[in-house]
Image 1: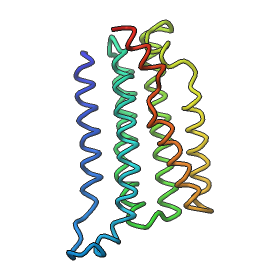
Image 2: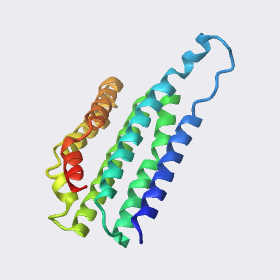
Image 3: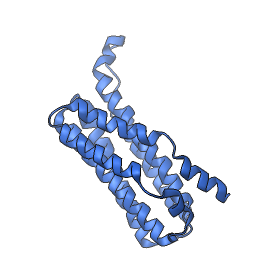
Length: 193
Protein backbone atom coordinates (compact mmCIF):
# COMPACT_ATOMS: atom_id res chain seq x y z
CA UNK A 1 0.00 0.00 0.00
CA UNK A 2 1.08 3.54 -0.71
CA UNK A 3 1.70 5.73 2.36
CA UNK A 4 -0.28 8.54 0.68
CA UNK A 5 -3.54 6.66 1.29
CA UNK A 6 -2.63 6.19 4.95
CA UNK A 7 -1.83 9.91 5.30
CA UNK A 8 -5.02 10.99 3.53
CA UNK A 9 -7.23 8.71 5.60
CA UNK A 10 -5.60 9.80 8.85
CA UNK A 11 -5.86 13.49 7.91
CA UNK A 12 -9.55 12.99 7.13
CA UNK A 13 -10.25 11.32 10.46
CA UNK A 14 -8.43 14.08 12.36
CA UNK A 15 -10.37 16.75 10.45
CA UNK A 16 -13.64 15.02 11.35
CA UNK A 17 -12.58 14.85 15.03
CA UNK A 18 -12.05 18.62 15.09
CA UNK A 19 -15.37 19.18 13.29
CA UNK A 20 -17.25 17.05 15.82
CA UNK A 21 -15.64 18.94 18.70
CA UNK A 22 -16.61 22.36 17.37
CA UNK A 23 -20.18 21.20 16.69
CA UNK A 24 -20.50 20.47 20.42
CA UNK A 25 -20.34 24.21 21.08
CA UNK A 26 -23.92 25.36 20.58
CA UNK A 27 -24.84 28.90 19.63
CA UNK A 28 -26.27 30.78 22.64
CA UNK A 29 -29.96 31.73 22.57
CA UNK A 30 -29.42 35.33 23.62
CA UNK A 31 -27.63 38.14 21.84
CA UNK A 32 -25.65 39.64 24.74
CA UNK A 33 -22.06 38.92 25.72
CA UNK A 34 -23.39 37.60 29.04
CA UNK A 35 -25.13 34.84 27.08
CA UNK A 36 -21.68 33.48 26.15
CA UNK A 37 -20.72 32.84 29.79
CA UNK A 38 -22.18 29.31 29.96
CA UNK A 39 -20.06 28.42 26.91
CA UNK A 40 -16.74 29.25 28.58
CA UNK A 41 -16.08 25.70 29.96
CA UNK A 42 -16.99 24.17 26.59
CA UNK A 43 -14.78 26.64 24.74
CA UNK A 44 -11.82 26.06 27.09
CA UNK A 45 -12.13 22.28 26.75
CA UNK A 46 -12.37 22.72 22.97
CA UNK A 47 -9.20 24.84 22.88
CA UNK A 48 -7.22 22.24 24.86
CA UNK A 49 -8.50 19.38 22.72
CA UNK A 50 -7.90 21.32 19.49
CA UNK A 51 -4.28 21.82 20.59
CA UNK A 52 -3.94 18.09 21.33
CA UNK A 53 -5.41 17.03 17.98
CA UNK A 54 -3.15 19.56 16.24
CA UNK A 55 -0.11 18.16 18.04
CA UNK A 56 -1.03 14.62 17.00
CA UNK A 57 -1.59 15.78 13.41
CA UNK A 58 1.84 17.46 13.30
CA UNK A 59 3.68 14.54 14.90
CA UNK A 60 1.80 12.03 12.76
CA UNK A 61 2.98 13.97 9.69
CA UNK A 62 6.62 13.59 10.74
CA UNK A 63 6.07 9.97 11.68
CA UNK A 64 4.74 9.12 8.23
CA UNK A 65 7.23 11.39 6.46
CA UNK A 66 10.01 8.95 7.30
CA UNK A 67 7.97 5.94 6.21
CA UNK A 68 9.00 4.18 3.01
CA UNK A 69 6.63 1.20 3.08
CA UNK A 70 3.31 0.36 4.69
CA UNK A 71 2.39 -3.07 6.03
CA UNK A 72 -0.56 -4.55 7.89
CA UNK A 73 0.95 -3.92 11.33
CA UNK A 74 1.39 -0.25 10.54
CA UNK A 75 -2.19 0.00 9.22
CA UNK A 76 -3.65 -1.56 12.37
CA UNK A 77 -1.40 0.42 14.71
CA UNK A 78 -2.54 3.59 12.92
CA UNK A 79 -6.20 2.53 13.28
CA UNK A 80 -5.54 1.90 16.98
CA UNK A 81 -4.26 5.48 17.35
CA UNK A 82 -7.19 6.92 15.40
CA UNK A 83 -9.64 4.97 17.59
CA UNK A 84 -8.38 6.62 20.78
CA UNK A 85 -8.17 10.04 19.15
CA UNK A 86 -11.75 9.66 17.91
CA UNK A 87 -12.89 9.49 21.56
CA UNK A 88 -11.44 12.93 22.34
CA UNK A 89 -14.66 14.74 21.24
CA UNK A 90 -16.74 12.64 23.68
CA UNK A 91 -14.45 13.43 26.61
CA UNK A 92 -14.13 17.06 25.52
CA UNK A 93 -17.89 17.49 25.33
CA UNK A 94 -18.47 15.79 28.69
CA UNK A 95 -15.74 17.84 30.35
CA UNK A 96 -17.09 21.12 28.98
CA UNK A 97 -20.72 20.26 29.65
CA UNK A 98 -20.05 19.51 33.31
CA UNK A 99 -17.56 22.28 34.12
CA UNK A 100 -14.49 20.04 34.33
CA UNK A 101 -16.05 17.61 36.82
CA UNK A 102 -13.79 15.02 38.45
CA UNK A 103 -14.96 11.97 36.47
CA UNK A 104 -14.92 13.85 33.17
CA UNK A 105 -11.36 15.02 33.85
CA UNK A 106 -10.32 11.45 34.69
CA UNK A 107 -11.87 10.12 31.47
CA UNK A 108 -10.22 12.89 29.45
CA UNK A 109 -6.82 12.01 30.93
CA UNK A 110 -7.35 8.30 30.33
CA UNK A 111 -8.14 8.94 26.66
CA UNK A 112 -5.07 11.18 26.35
CA UNK A 113 -2.90 8.51 27.99
CA UNK A 114 -4.28 5.74 25.77
CA UNK A 115 -3.78 7.96 22.69
CA UNK A 116 -0.16 8.52 23.72
CA UNK A 117 0.37 4.78 24.22
CA UNK A 118 -1.18 4.08 20.80
CA UNK A 119 1.09 6.71 19.20
CA UNK A 120 4.12 5.13 20.88
CA UNK A 121 3.10 1.69 19.56
CA UNK A 122 2.70 3.08 16.02
CA UNK A 123 6.08 4.81 16.28
CA UNK A 124 7.81 1.60 17.42
CA UNK A 125 6.15 -0.52 14.71
CA UNK A 126 7.27 1.95 12.04
CA UNK A 127 10.82 2.02 13.42
CA UNK A 128 10.92 -1.80 13.42
CA UNK A 129 9.66 -1.86 9.81
CA UNK A 130 12.10 0.82 8.67
CA UNK A 131 15.09 -0.42 10.69
CA UNK A 132 17.20 0.84 13.59
CA UNK A 133 19.26 3.02 11.26
CA UNK A 134 16.26 4.65 9.60
CA UNK A 135 15.81 8.39 9.48
CA UNK A 136 12.87 8.11 11.87
CA UNK A 137 14.83 6.04 14.42
CA UNK A 138 17.60 8.64 14.38
CA UNK A 139 15.11 11.48 14.68
CA UNK A 140 13.20 9.97 17.61
CA UNK A 141 16.10 8.87 19.77
CA UNK A 142 15.22 8.48 23.45
CA UNK A 143 11.65 9.43 24.38
CA UNK A 144 12.11 11.75 27.38
CA UNK A 145 9.07 13.90 26.49
CA UNK A 146 6.95 10.81 25.92
CA UNK A 147 7.80 9.29 29.29
CA UNK A 148 7.33 12.62 31.09
CA UNK A 149 3.97 13.06 29.35
CA UNK A 150 2.75 9.62 30.44
CA UNK A 151 3.73 10.41 34.03
CA UNK A 152 1.84 13.72 33.88
CA UNK A 153 -1.23 12.01 32.40
CA UNK A 154 -1.25 9.52 35.26
CA UNK A 155 -0.82 12.34 37.78
CA UNK A 156 -3.68 14.19 36.08
CA UNK A 157 -5.97 11.16 36.18
CA UNK A 158 -5.29 10.46 39.86
CA UNK A 159 -5.40 14.15 40.80
CA UNK A 160 -8.75 14.61 39.04
CA UNK A 161 -10.46 12.87 41.96
CA UNK A 162 -8.95 15.34 44.42
CA UNK A 163 -8.50 18.58 42.46
CA UNK A 164 -9.72 19.26 38.95
CA UNK A 165 -7.30 22.19 38.82
CA UNK A 166 -4.21 20.03 39.35
CA UNK A 167 -5.53 17.60 36.77
CA UNK A 168 -6.14 20.40 34.27
CA UNK A 169 -2.69 21.87 34.87
CA UNK A 170 -1.08 18.45 34.24
CA UNK A 171 -2.91 18.10 30.90
CA UNK A 172 -2.08 21.69 29.97
CA UNK A 173 1.64 21.18 30.74
CA UNK A 174 1.74 18.14 28.47
CA UNK A 175 0.09 20.12 25.67
CA UNK A 176 2.60 22.96 26.07
CA UNK A 177 5.48 20.45 26.10
CA UNK A 178 4.45 19.07 22.72
CA UNK A 179 3.38 22.41 21.25
CA UNK A 180 7.04 23.38 21.08
CA UNK A 181 8.38 21.69 17.92
CA UNK A 182 11.10 19.10 18.39
CA UNK A 183 14.16 20.56 16.67
CA UNK A 184 15.89 17.14 16.53
CA UNK A 185 13.23 15.75 14.23
CA UNK A 186 13.12 18.84 12.03
CA UNK A 187 16.93 18.80 11.66
CA UNK A 188 17.09 15.12 10.75
CA UNK A 189 14.33 15.39 8.15
CA UNK A 190 15.76 18.67 6.77
CA UNK A 191 19.17 17.04 6.28
CA UNK A 192 17.48 14.14 4.43
CA UNK A 193 16.02 16.45 1.76
